[in-house]
Every structure is written in C-alpha cells, then in structure tokens.
Length: 326
Ligand code: GYE
Image 1 (cartoon, rainbow, N blue to C red):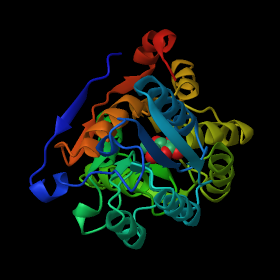
Image 2 (tube, protein in one colour):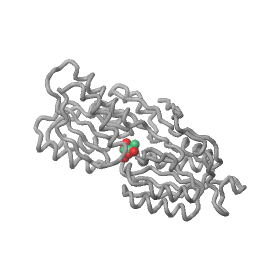
Image 3 (cartoon, protein in one colour):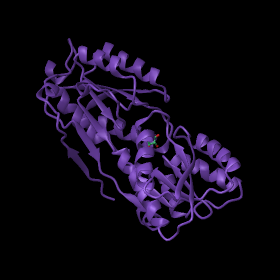
C-alpha cells in the first residue's frame, strides 16, 4: 500500500513559532556552522509491535539523514521521559523529539526546553498543553478519526439487525492520546444507535499480556459478548488467546476490531481471527528527520502534520500481507 503523508497547516502558526534555532553554545547545530544535528529522542517504550516498528523507523531515518540520535526508552513512564528531556537539555542537543506517553503534565519541562532555546517536536502522540508555542509541530495520526473508522465498520456490519450488540473495549494506556481519542471517535459513531452497548471498557496498556488478562476477566463476568474493540493489535492478539481459552471462536463468536495493522495483526485478520483493522502507520522516521532539519534551521513548518491511513478487511489483509513492511 502506498502511504501518503499530507501536511495540514493549521491556523495559529505564527511567525513567533518559527524564529527559534536549536543551536546552543558551542553545540553542533546548523547555526554553529558545521551543519551537523544532534537529536534527543525520548521513546514511550517497547510495549507493542507498532512501537518496535516506530523505533526502527526513527533510528534508520536518523542514520540516513545524517542526524546523530540520542535515544532513550521510557518504559511507559512519564517520569523517565521528563528525566530524558532534562538530560537532553543539559547536553545541549539541537532538537528534542518525543512521543509523550500521556497527554497531561508536560508544561514545566517544555518551558525548560524553550528557555534553553531547544526546539521540540511531538511525534506520534499529542500533549494537552494550552500553550502551543511550547513545541514546533506535532507529527502523527488522527486518533479520533481512527476510532470513527472502527465505529463505522461496526455500524455497517450490524445494520441488518435490531438486536442489542454487546461490546467490550480494551483501551490503550490510561491518559494517552491514542486511548482517549480512539475511545471518543468510536463512541461518537456508535452512540447514534442505542442498540450498541459498551458493556465493559478497561485499559490493557497496549500490551499483549494485559490484553489477554483483561479479556479473561471480561469473559468471566460477561457471558454474552458480541464484539471486542481493542485500541491496538497487540491487545487484540492477547484477547484472542483468552477467547480461545474460553472455548469461543475469535472472529466468529466474538467479532474483533483493532487498530495499527502490524504484521501479526494482519496475519490474524487474514486468518479470520480479527474482522477489521484500522491502520495507524508507525513509519514516522523520515518525516520526523525532515521536520527536525527545518526547525533547527529556523524554517517554517506546519503546526500539525497528519499521517494518512487506510483500513483493512480480511480479504484486503490477504492481498496486503506479502508487502507489509512492519
Ligand atoms: O497504536 C500502539 C502503541 O501511540 C499510535 O502506541 C501509538 C500507539 C499504537 O503502543 O500499538
């Protein structure tokens, strides 16, 4: 599948947002003359197949574009990300990029970066800071739209029936942008018809192990589950093990919708165990490096760069699988 990336310039991108240059002291930024760039990158963790593919994309793209990458894995903990960002500020990197594990609580550290005149790029996940001059741009998917796509498939699949549809939801990491937004987009679409009932909704922290554990609990307390909506493939794959363990057939007895479209998810979709996947591309590395070069030079960048994505049915997964890169 061809991946198209579109840039969306939002109102509010002011000249003020474009003036800063990441060069610090005797550092190495373009401003200091030798043109080399050092990026400090704080990754969420290694919780899912998506994250592994994202990390690989960032590391490979840095190498290809000649950017020196300082990389740290926060193991899904905000405090570790804050520590990493502070350490990048101290090391006077030219640009900081990070994928915020949760949306809230970033203002202080972002102000510290701004005071040190180091530009920050948000990648993959958003923050809820009111002050949008705290970062230069946000590159990533539209998670609300992903939730809507999941909801639309469900509405279309059940449009011939008036019976109640009992749904269980495995949410991503509590407080994270993709968990908040995928829940909201889905709820917005299915909320139009009262036959759709979310009978249980809990976090599985985007991991396979937690997805399995929470699905086991759902199955114990709810004998009549029609649909599982999992905020990522990994939790869906863990849940499939729980469903099979309970003697039910995933994809038939319980219809399953997930988000991401990583290889293991696509395989389960092609095998009939998942019914529908909303794609979320982790291949953000090349765009991130392009944006980094621009902000370090003080060039104009859009305030928001949205990744365009598709969806997959079981038939489409069979066709797409051989060429899937992650
Ligand atoms: O969907 C999930 C990962 O932030 C878009 O994080 C990302 C999400 C992705 O753990 O698998």
